[in-house]
Image (cartoon, rainbow, N blue to C red):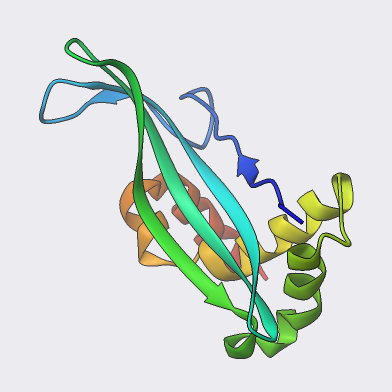
Length: 133
């Protein structure tokens, strides 16, 4: 069964999230989203988080590119084994799948260097919440 990716849409500069800018090639980078893709492998499950950047170039028009990607496997995170397995098998759908993916997003991907590099305002927000706990 094919599982659709879950997209975490980020704000376009109106709060914490992402602020549009021009890159060093002159392209207008107007949006970045985080996409979660659960999958099954051998006897387990995993999830891949990717940061997708949407930009406009005068030569090529509207484009998108993956600028960061990290994969997490259930064997490395046994405390999240049930969530990963249910997501990968397709047992969770709709709101339940979104909440499970959100749990993995907060526990696994937000603390990574990719978030610190490409989405620093969200990373700082995460650090603020962790300090208050």
